[in-house]
Length: 244
Image (cartoon, rainbow, N blue to C red):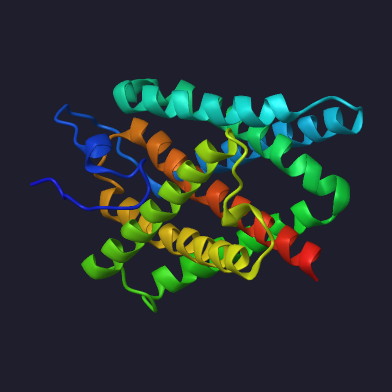
C-alpha cells in the first residue's frame, strides 16, 4: 500500500512517488546528499556570476524575473516528465541561481555582508532542524503536517496576490518595513524552517523504497524549501537593518 502523506513542499507529493514500474536501484540518502551539494554549487556559481554583472553596471532585473518564470516552467514540466529530472533539476538550479543573484544583488550593494550572513543562518537552521528531527525532539504528526501545509499555502497566496497587485502600482504591507511586514517575514521564515522537517520525514519514509531517479525529486524538494528559507531570512534582515 502506497503511503499517502502530505507535505507543504510541492516536490514531495504522492504523485511524484507513486511508481508501479520495477526498479533495482533505490533512492538513498547518500545519493540525495551528493545531488543536493552539486545543485547548491551550481546555484552559488550562477549567483556570484550575476553579482559580478551587477557590479559591472548590468541591469540584472531580467535575471530576477527570468529566474522566477524559468523555475516555474521547469517545475510544471517536472510534474509531467519525471524521468527527465536528472536534466530538469540542474536547469532548475540555474534559474534559481539567476533569481537569487538578481534578487540579492541590490541588497548586497547596500549591505555587502548581508547575503553571506543569510546563507550562514540558513545553513545553521538546516542543521538545527535536522538534529531536532533525528532526535525526535519535534515529531512530525498528522496535525503538525496540516498546520504547516495550511500556513505555507496561506503565505504563498499572500505573495501571489501581492505580486499581482504590484503590477498595478499597489504595494501591500509585505513589501514595507512596518512591524506588520516584519512579523509576516518572521512567521514566513518559521514556517519555511519547519517545512524542512516535513521534507526530512518524507525522504526517510521513502528511502531505499522509491526508484533511484527520484533522488532528483528529493533534491528538488529540499532546494525549494532551502531557497524559500534563504529569501525570507534575507528579506527579514534587510527590513531590520533599514528600520534600525
